[in-house]
Amino acid sequence: MNESFWFYLAIILNSTLRGLAPILLCTLAVGLCAKVRVFNIAMEGTLLFGCFGAIVGNYWFENLWLALLTAMAMATAFSLLVATFIVRFKVPPLVTGISANIWSAGFTAFMVPVIFGTTGFYFDPEMEALPKLNITSNNMFLRIFSDLNPIDFLSFGIAILIYIIMYKTVVGFRFRAVGENVEAAQSMGTHVNRYKYGAFIATGILCGIAGMQLSLGQVVQFVEGMSGGRGFTALIASSLAGAHPLKIIASSFLFGFANAAGSFLLMFGIKDKIAQLVPYIITLILLIVVGIRQRIKQKKA
Image 1 (cartoon, one colour):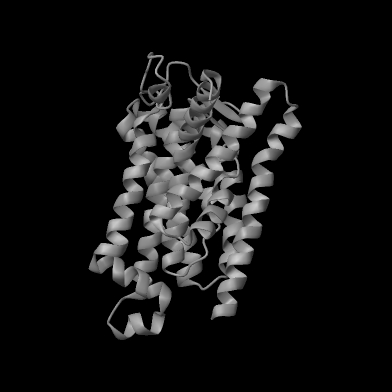
Image 2 (cartoon, rainbow, N blue to C red):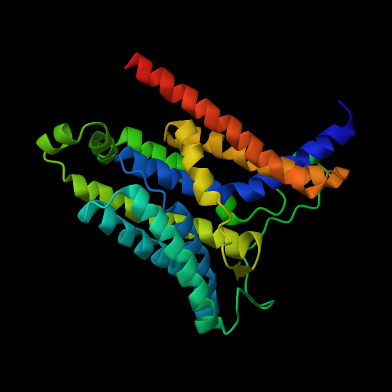
């Protein structure tokens, strides 16, 4: 293969990695909720709160660490609100999730002019962004990691950590037992609701980190609806991976690669509308795969 192939491949892989963290972290959150048998579709709204919280924290405190804490706090508060309706009041998750996503979009749009005095978005060129790995080498392999920030690397570590906790510890065993057989888990003295709330708290923390990567990593601003469907993508990616933390890395990478490939086609004069269709076509194919897998599982059961 010639040098141009490796050059273009490095560009696509770099773009994939730069857009991967928010999808990966949200998908891990969906997977954790799935482990306790909760179908949490409020991920889009939780991620949006993470984005908003990061910008608000940076605006108020002018400190990245406090911005991260604010993002996690806001996303966790929102996630616990969703948990209260689903776990405490037994409202159907589908109804709760749709309502929560709509409410989050309206609330953040309302708060932007209240806090920043602007409408629709907030941008400040002096606002501090996440530091990026600056690589000037011509080496194709090294260029794959150019412009990545700490959260891009951290997201992989979090996935491995969740795998260890889920499959190598007693807490993880009880966590999974709640999802596999509630009655058996209760008979062992496990507080089922405590683990469900734990999944929602973890969801808030993960979406807070993901939100900070979006609003202070990829760009340095907040725009209404900037979660951009990543929360919904996470639902499919988690189903594809069977909610397994390590498989989630692969499924998230696939969606990130699809988005990067769509953007890459624009460089060759492909029309915007056609290029934008690529991720959706791949998503549709993956939905079919998920459907076939579930049908096979049902037949085996």
